[in-house]
Structure formats: structure tokens, C-alpha cells
Image (tube, rainbow, N blue to C red; front, top):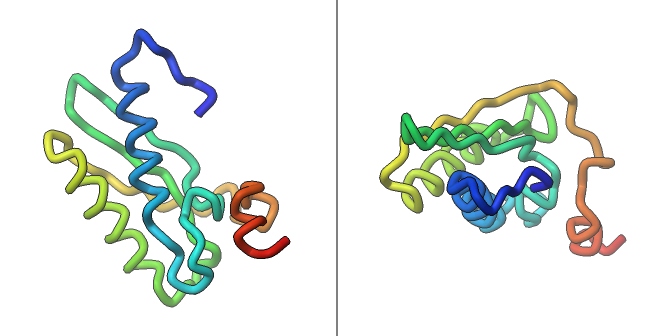
Length: 110
């Protein structure tokens, strides 16, 4: 989260949303969706109490894709009950192994 701003309260919410997302594993690889590189961004609008999570899946044919998306929505909504939650699925840029964080690679044994 390179755009953290200590004077912006939404920055704290963004960090906490990312930590919530770190608790969600990809069911096939058992690596959290953040370290797997599936989360592209989190936007918080304090005025409208809206959280938007932009993410992708490892492929358009992911057999558990809808379950992952619903888990993201439910987890964020549960932890941020004062906010409306929107999960935006995107295919641009296309996910690839280069998006996996060093921690994700460690968990993969690489």
C-alpha cells in the first residue's frame, strides 16, 4: 500500500481491509489471495461508506471463482459493517505468476 497517508482516515481502513483479505486462502493453493496477487486494489469512500475491492482470479475458468468472490464480499462486509462492499472482478491485467509476492513464493516452496 504505497499510498498510505497518515492524515487520511481511509488509509487505515484500506490497510485493515488488506489484512482481512490476507485471511482468505485460494482453496486450490492454500495461499492467501493478497500474496497470490489476486487483489489489484482497495478503494474506500468515507463520504458514502463504500469499500470497493478490485481483484481477479487465476483464470476465467477457475472452478471456485464465485466462492472466492463471495468470501471476499462477506469477509469485508463482516469486518466493516458500517460500509457497503463491492467486489469488482477484472481480467486486466491478466493474472500471472509474476504477481505472486515474495511471501507467496515462500509458501509455494520457491
